[in-house]
Image 1: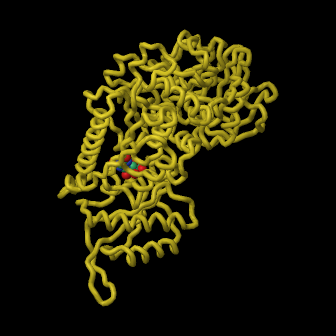
Image 2 (image 1 turned 90 degrees about the vertical axis):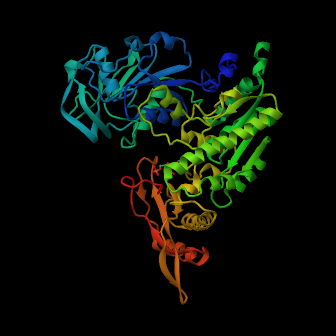
Image 3 (image 1 turned 135 degrees about the horizontal axis):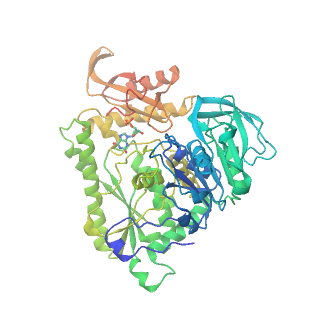
Amino acid sequence: MATPPPSSAAASASTKVSVSPAAGAFQTILIVDLGAQYTQLIARRIRELNVHSEIVSNKLTAKQLARRPEVIGLILSGGPNSVYKFNSPLIDPALLDGRIPVLGICYGMQLMGQLLGGKIEEARRQEFGKTELWVDNHEDSLLFRHLNPNLICWMSHGDCVASTSGLPRGTKITAHTEATPVAAFENRARKLYAVQFHPEVTHTPWGTELLRNFVYDGCSARGDWTMGNFVEQSVEAIRSQVMGAGLRSADAEHSGDVICAVSGGVDSLCTAALIDRAVGSRLHSIFVDHGFLRHEEGDKVVQAWKTHFKSELIRVNAGPRFLSLLKGIADPERKRKIIGREFIKVFDEEALRIKRSKVAVKWLAQGTLYPDVIESSGVGMQAHTIKTHHNVGGLPKRMKLGLVEPLRDLFKDEVRKLALELGLPRPLVYRQPFPGPGLAIRIIGEVTAERLRILRAADKIVRDEIEMAEMERPWQYFAVLPAVKTVGVMGDHRTYGYPLVIRAVSSEDAMTADWSRIPHKNLERISSRIIGEVKGINRVCLDITSKPPATIEWE
Ligand code: XMP
């Protein structure tokens, strides 16, 4: 089902008017955010089971829910509060009226218990971490179907449903632990299910099976959330938005071309790829090459484009312009600001040029992801989004473009799956995170053409050698050029050159990181190749600091 284009007032004000292909098109499980650290994780786990999920505020009412026929279940998240304390988050009790299956997790279980007339109290013994769990009423339980009767789960709670006297009427205990007599309960007739532990974390190793039971047996999911379906829906939705296709003639005014900024990262490539499929040559993509990309990276983006896209890619080689602006600048934040500002300026100039030559440009594409949407709506607690320097948020208002944001329903791991579905090359899909300001923030101090040459050559060696090493591929691995010089000796000559630092880290989300143990033989090869091949470096060092206390990048 396609979503109609925005109203003209919205479009001309450049407000967010994006089409969401998932809106109404896929069966959906809503995750009601009650303040948990893990809300996004629950949403991701449900999607891994091929069911679309969406995080919503606890203000959701049963009336609003009734207007969303695609919603097949609710999950009440955990949260740090105590249900019996003043001002703790609540939900509309009518959500538990049995019309829709509901799963309560941790605080969500306690809230459900209280709203159903049960009693919640401070636990006699708090449980944190891995905990042994015994399943009760195994044969009747929907959640524990096909699971072992004795399991390890991950607990993190200070309150619990009071032992049998606190159990809401009509519900059955389905699991207990040594310290918690009601570790799970169910009321099958009213389609209500609750667990005190966290099935969404990997420390509950069978948690996915439990969620699968809820989603498929409890909510009768079809499992229609696949990237193949997403592409189909998305392409149709973009076509409708951008071309006003198949819509009322009044919507024809929205028909127009799209401008897109491409950085070579997987988000912008996927954004462009979907729009390219939907409207082909009506997409005009701009690749601002600021000159701080890695060895041959810009050329690879252009090559991949030629193979996979029908529309044009305009590469703006702005390296000299950026370099002259950074002359004499050593402070990292100033570098970032200068690069960020200039990036937007170059993009704007190019976009205006296109707009002038193609009068029909009406849309700007952006690679906004679901975590950004959650964050800006104020729902969901985690704010781990890494701000990308390539966001073109500064596009002048005078251009009056509406927004096309085809990825606004997706988490990052889904974007990678989408990229594979769209046939984009694997090296681009699995490219390690690369900061918007590029090598400019890996050259400590002033960036010059010569120092760029040195770092780019050394960085290629570091990456090539680590990719050949017998080790798990680090999250990020690269070279850093410090701003000091050291004395060395080569042949019979004294040298005075730069040291080069190898930085490689393992991480899950860049919030924390550990330094990677690169095998000595690979370190040796990196060192001798850099000294032998990169003029200007006479010493190679290894950064063995985790984050915290250090950060991943040196600047
Ligand atoms: P730090 O250095 O803070 O980096 O541990 C965390 C993650 O963010 C990336 N990073 C940036 N990304 N613009 C970006 O787009 C930036 O200015 C920037 N600084 C750091 C870094 O590569 C790592 O993945």
